[in-house]
Image: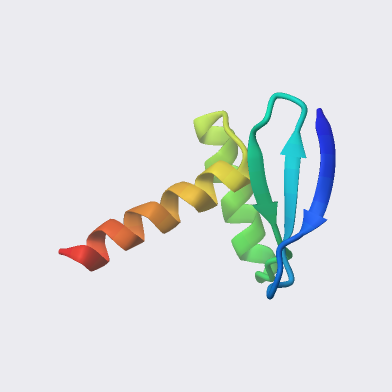
Length: 67
């Protein structure tokens, strides 16, 4: 459950703090309809959220960049 949200200074993001103490940040992203559909399919295939898929892809891209 979300306890509170607060702006992240210097950005257009919001920090979301839950009652268990976990913290996430959110911001709008813009994609074409076919990209949203692909994200939805990936999330359904993996039984996870689109946010988890996006986060995993970012981490993977960062790791590949480091090589």
